Image (cartoon, rainbow over all chains, first blue to last red; front, side, top):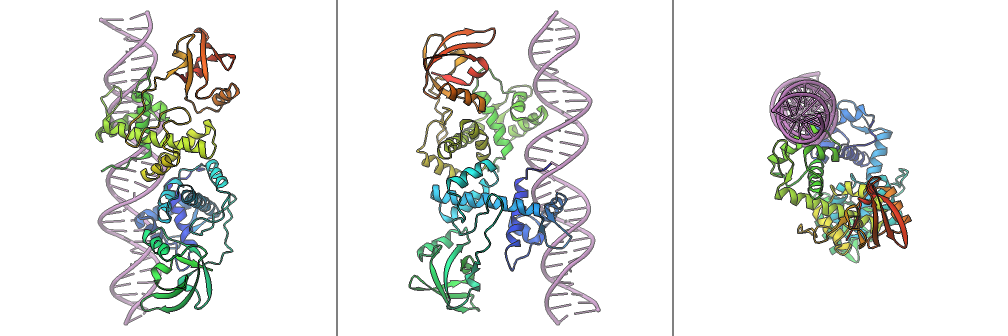
Amino acid sequence: MANYSSIAVENFIKAIYKYESRDGADTKSGTIATELGITHAAATDMARKLAAKNMVDYEKYKELKLTPAGKKLAVHVVRKHRLWETFLHQVFGLSMHEIHKEAELLEHATSDFLLDKISEYLGNPQFDPHGDPIPTKEGKVETSQASLSMVYAELNTSYKICRLRSSDEEFFDFCQANDMRLGTALTIKKRYPKTRMLEAELNHKTLLIHYDLAQAIHVE
Amino acid sequence: MANYSSIAVENFIKAIYKYESRDGADTKSGTIATELGITHAAATDMARKLAAKNMVDYEKYKELKLTPAGKKLAVHVVRKHRLWETFLHQVFGLSMHEIHKEAELLEHATSDFLLDKISEYLGNPQFDPHGDPIPTKEGKVETSQASLSMVYAELNTSYKICRLRSSDEEFFDFCQANDMRLGTALTIKKRYPKTRMLEAELNHKTLLIHYDLAQAIHVE
DNA sequence: ATTAAAATTTAAGTATGCTTAAATATGTGC
DNA sequence: GCACATATTTAAGCATACTTAAATTTTAAT
């Protein structure tokens, strides 16, 4: 049984995957529930069901962990998501804030056969428009990239933007207005922890950026 | 309520639409059930639910009829389906027998916004690769085309193929082997009603075609 | 016009994926 | 170490979209 996973299952597994690889975050049922916009009760329910299907390791009150089978599914869905984002951006010219929502739907309606065609068409890209690595067909995810949020990066060090992790229109308005793209060089000059702002120099300008926004900008 | 329809509802409505516009066919719950691969009971159930939502006119033991709202939804889903088929064929080079299955999934995961982009990208095509008309954004469907299955066409009359309505691989193998495409000229020479075969002349060859296959070939 | 066959509907039940409300466990402050 | 706030789980219930099995209606044959 179960060579097919429902949309709800795919999204649940994907949410665990997302928070597992995020430091400072946990994968308790409440976190997943909030991420998915469902109640804690529903998340607990799903956790038990997926534990029975050997997709998730689940002990009451503990964090959820993906089993190898769960991780395999998560990576596969992420591959679909990121390939669609790349495709929508490159082929239809959808903007950065538009691609996520559409990919969120398409990723659950894409056969492996079609996925191969998309990847091929794009020349088997390694990164999506946000700078996130696209898992290979075999399930390998590029992890070498030691990316780091601006919030935690060192002062007075020369960095380049390597990821813009957001799907918010205002965020990308800001990026565009200040010529911030993947590859743009920047240096962090100062931090104001109380107001949660940092001062960065890029494109010969000095910018004050709030941590909430800087969080989404990764550098290396 | 209900600006969103589930996949099950979209498929049910689409099935009624398909059989409404097919002469020699009825739209009783059993026909729809068979089309969708569900039990008669399930079809009756859905018919009652959709009647309550004013998508379908339903009287017990009678044929199902789409209301204006139901037809609008059906046409919209058909537009998604045919635009995706066109896209998959033209952009990824998927073959005729492959496009249906994929479009069947994608049509339920496509926002109106994305649909516009697809249509625009393709130059707002009027016909899909099968020769079926693509409904406009406003819901108009080209009906002028007096297409007619080969099975019912007149003898010794010069026709052109205008539709190849199948998603079967062998069907398209046969078409390719005999250079039968949209636009190909042909003449029907003779019928053998007992064996349900017809003799057709095209590309300077004489072909014996079974009714079951000829059914899918429309001419004008 | 009857009657048997075929189709349709009803009834009862199931799995999925949710909800709300109550109960229980965890962990933090003091 | 205890009490309380917070988080999680359990319990009960609901909507959707199906199933099987039985009852009913239609239809088609004679």
